[in-house]
Length: 196
Image 1 (cartoon, one colour):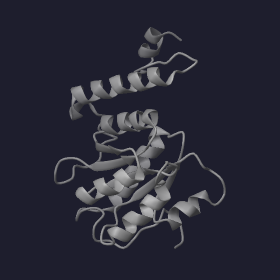
Image 2: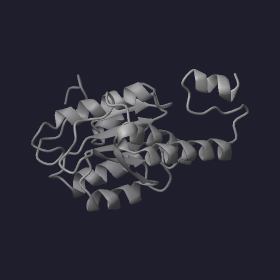
Image 3: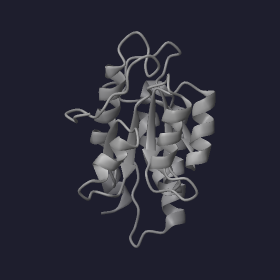
Image 4: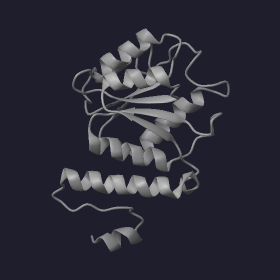
C-alpha cells in the first residue's frame, strides 16, 4: 500500500519494511509534533478524559525504549493527555517526587532499575499517594501479572500496546479517582477482579 492510499484510509503515517529504528523514531516524532502543533482541540473528544483542575490529566510514562516512548506519547497526547516521559526507574521516582501524576505507565523491564523495583520504591517512599501504576510489559506468562500486582502496581497491559486497551485502562483508573481528586487519599487499589 502506498502512503497516498494509506492516507485515504485514515492512516497518519506508513513505514516500509524492513523497519529501521531511526525511520520509525523520526516518523513518530513528526506525528507527535504535528499533534502538539494542532493543539488539544484536535484530539478526539471520545478519548479525552474530563478535565482535572489544571485542565488536563497528567500521565507519567516510564519507558526506556525510544520507539515505545514516542508511540505511546503520540496516542496519549492526541487523546488530550499531558505526558511526561522518564527513561528509567530512577528518573521516574524523581519525577514522581516533584509532581502529582494522575496515572503512571510503568515499563517492567528496564536496565539499572526495573519497573517492579521502581514501583516498590514509589509505594514505600510515598505511602500517602495511591496514584494508579499500570504495568507495561512484553511478558504474558502465567504469574507475570501477579508479580506486577505484588510489587504495588494496580493493573497490567501487555506489549505490543493496543491503543484502545491503553485508553480504556487510563479511563478506568481516571474515573476511579472520582471528583475529589485522584491518587492521594485512597487505600491501595488492585486491578479489576483481582483479589488482594
